Image 1 (tube, rainbow, N blue to C red):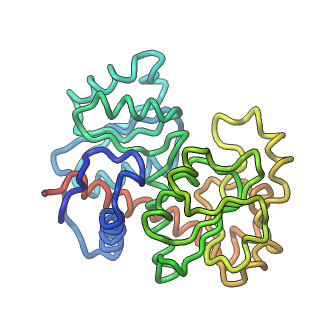
Image 2: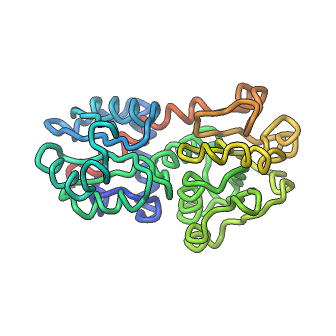
Image 3: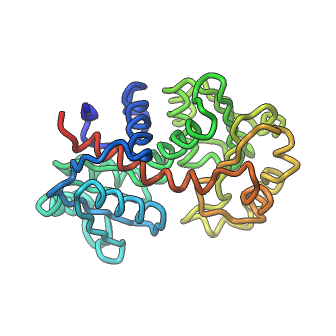
Length: 300
C-alpha cells in the first residue's frame, strides 16, 4: 500500500487519477471486510468543528477508532478558531498533542492557514469552497450502484453550485465522467471552480437532466446562508427534484449528500423511493474516509 504523495488532503484536485482510484479501491476493500490493518494505532487525531455535523463527526470518529486510533472532538465554542485564538496558533498547539487535524470550517482560508502552520496532516472535512470527503463517498456510491464510473456515467447535479459541486467538478475532470450542473444563473459554481473544470457543462436548462445515470441535489440554503432562505426558495422553486423531473431520466438513480429538506429541493417520493441511494451514500462516508486516512498514515 503506497501512501498519498502529500500529507494534507484539502481538495480532490490535489490528487492524480491513480491516487483517487486507489482511495476508492481501498474503500471498497474495507467495506467488503477484506482489509483490517490499523495504521492509526497509537495515534490521536483532533476533529476540529467550526460548523456542527452529524455524518462527518460520527464517520470520522468511528473510522479513526476502527483504524486503531483515538479522536478528540473540539467544537467551535471550545476553540473559537480565528476569534478566540488565531488559526495558526491553534495548529501549532494541536501539533504538540495530536498526530493530525480533521477540520470542518467556514472560510477555506482558515483551512489553508491550518495546513500551512501544522507539521501534521490536515484533512478538509468541509469548507465553504469544497467538500472533498463527501465526494469520495459519492464516487464510491456511483461505482457500487452502477458498476462503473467512466465516460458512460452521466451525472447531473440540480441546484446550488456550492462546495459539494466544486469538489464533484474536480472529480469529474480527474476521472473523465460527464458532469452537468443545472443551476439558476445567480447560483452557478464559482468562476474558480469552472476554471479548474472546463469540461463540466453548466446550464440553467432542466432539459439537461434527460439521459442522466445519476441525478444529484443538495439543500438550497446551506449553513450560514439562513438570511437568504426566502430568496433562495423563490429562485430555486422550479429546480426541485420531483417525480416529474426524474421521469426525464427514467434509469437514473437519485443522490443527496444530506441533510435533506423534503418538500424543498427534493420530494419525499423521490428521496424515499426505489431509485434513491441516499442512505448508502451516507454510509459510504465511513469507508471512504477510512481509506483516505489509511493512505495518509499507512506505511510507505
